[in-house]
Image 1 (cartoon, rainbow, N blue to C red):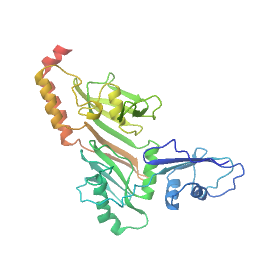
Image 2: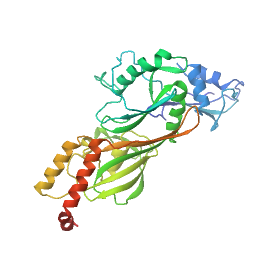
Image 3: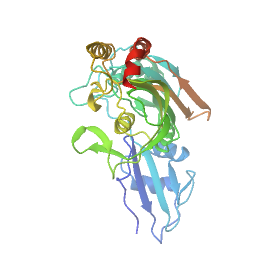
Image 4: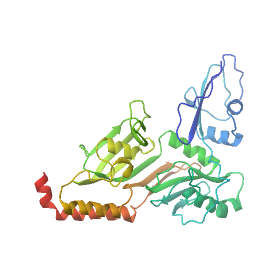
Length: 350
């Protein structure tokens, strides 16, 4: 008997379908088989998904002309379409475009900018700016390969700065989405965290889910989703540390939750407790220094610094790097300067 769709294994931007063909299944093309099974999917999107390796039979990728056979296990990872933006108004916005071609865009998002509209928040977001950009530059020259609206392959939090990847075509959306789903996208972040990790280089391999005691947070939970963060301390400064984090998976708030779990929450991260003094003296001058630094850096100290992926059309390995924004750089410099003047405090505390 044929299987049904399996909605248990999902990423934010992907829907996973799994089927087992009947013992008496006739040999038909896999695209026709899946068109009959998956609601509201276009043939173009399905073809792009198959070509990008998003459809497997018994664990192996297949071509669009593959003919299904009896008792086979079929799995399809379909990138979810960009949410309807008919109600969204494009808004002129200064978008820092790092790279652009006919398939995709790489942008450098500033801090304090919401990526995607939410409830009661339908304007002033990056997507509003991208809709306007598409209307002015992409759609006037539109052919069948371009989507009607920007495809967010992933997202970063409002107060996180850094590199973001945008798909312009269905093919790019499927191909890049598959890379994210397979965790083959290379991403590194830089974070300023309180204290120092016990080991200056390591891997946090702990599952994450909604914190049962605080639904606004993610936390390490036994039956949570698989999450892996590799980290390395770049600059230890006793009170705080500049850390590089490399994501192997991409869970919501992954770095923020993992670093909090090892007692090194991100500096100034209000949601995860980093907006309080975690390490340091009782001296009034120190407290004042930290409070002033919070004012200089009124957001979690997290920046999506590098991004690497395979180009969906050329097959070329693409890699991008970005500078820390001014607020982050200034925050690090303030700590370095403070440390240079507080050797006496360090000697007393060590």
